[in-house]
Amino acid sequence: MSSWKGKSRGGFIGHLFFVLVLKYLSLSIAYFFLRFVALYFLFFTPKAFKAIYDLNYNRLGFGFFRSIANVYTCFYTFGKILVDKITMMLALRDDFQHDSIGMDNIRKIAEENRGGVLITSHFGGWQSAAFFLDDSGIKPKLVMMEAEHEKIKQVFENRAKKFVLDVIPMTEDLSHIFAIAKALKNKEIISIQGDRILPGSKTIKVPFLGKEASFPVGPFAVIAKFNVPVSFIFSIKSGKTHYKCIASPTIKLSDHPEIKKPRDKERFLIEQYALNLEKQVLQHPEQWFNFYDF
Image 1: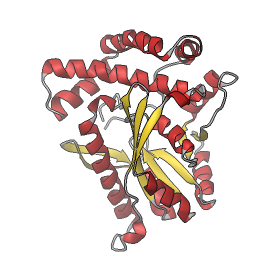
Image 2: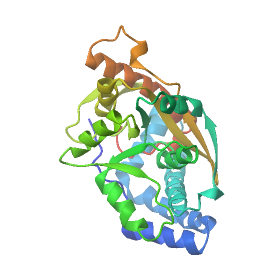
Image 3: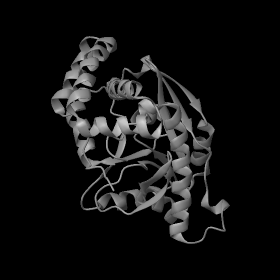
Image 4: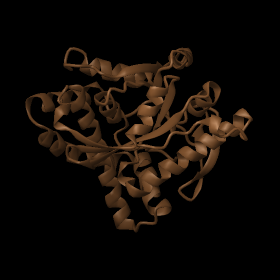
């Protein structure tokens, strides 16, 4: 079973370069440079290439040439979404619009005032969704890797006009577990990714894109333990400055009293998540950003 190593590509210099391009030039020029970055990834990141090629060729059934073209499109789209995130963090997000589908599902979670979990994925602009939720008056706490959080702080400190992400960094000493528990006890909403397996994590295998795939138990165990409602969130880039934010119907374990054992609750939630994620990946495979053998 493959797992994520806990660190994404793209260091301080790369982020800073695009920060400066966006502040002093334009989004279009930043996208122009990304075409060359995507070409680099196409030829010099064999593991990522193989993972996305396998998705297109073996899982989605595309031909050889289209699968290669789709790999390039995936890398290019990934870059654009990262640049969009930088633009939003520089408080230039008024240039971006979004359509919301199912946003009432999240509002209901907030209105119930009992806490809740929004499960995201490395698909589409998952961090961009936080900005759109912020515009709607919903401020979830984002659970993310400490290295990713520190990278964002390093690049944007003293450069961003408004740093809006409220983050719970995942740490090696597992102190983030207590922060998550505290947030849910305080009836807050947290946002956590449901598709990344770190070394040593417990997993459950469920059907996904024609085979069985392993999903991490942790995010779903939190929901089962605290018995809070959950919605699956997808933010899809649909134009140069346009996104579509989708929130699935709320799932409450209290509506399924027949599911009693913690492991059965976790499996049920993971199955529902995998079904929702698969639906989106089939419609927008170029926005699948797990660059390893999922």
